[in-house]
Amino acid sequence: MFLSIHAVAKRCCSRGVGLLRGSTVKRAIACVAVALLLAGCGGGSVDGRYGLAGKVTLKGQPLAKGTIEFSTGEGGGPLSGGTIENGQYTIPAESGLKPGTYTVRISSIEEAGGSAPAAPGPESLTQVGKEVIPAEFNVNSSKTIEVKTSGNTFDFAIP
Image 1 (cartoon, rainbow, N blue to C red):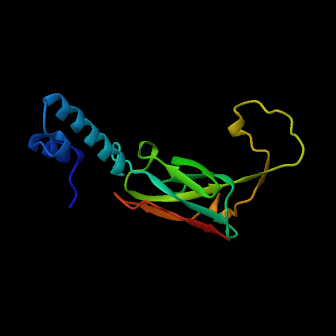
Image 2: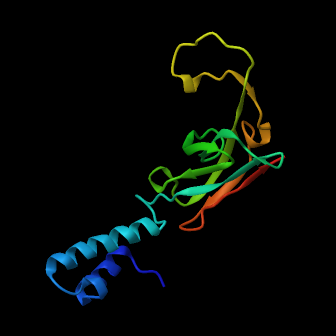
Image 3: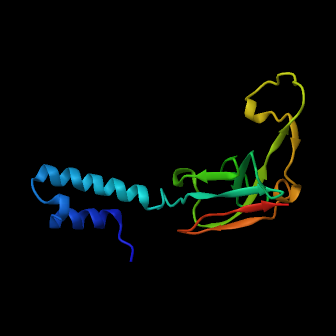
């Protein structure tokens, strides 16, 4: 059975449960603390968006660094994404996705030896090096995920 944060806080505050017995000020402080605690543990949504997390391995080893992005299919730009570090990514609900099906693209650039001349524009837009992720997980990806209202952990094992 799932109770909303509001319902639990209301129930606790109105009945004077545990720490909430006593003065009105103490009860109000305790109610706020209970609501904040529950909000941090809920894994709920923000504006209908849900957080995602998972692991990414390349040839059986955690992917050291890279990016992951989620889009609505061919031609659709990224709707959300994040960085992969030490084989793990986490996207909070604020930046997450609404329930639905999304195409996944993973990228990791192997730094080229030597230094390249500085290019104009933001550093993140200039790729110097070789893509190490196979095209079927990147530019030609057909990998999809189904985002739901809970359990949005997606792991990717890249051969």
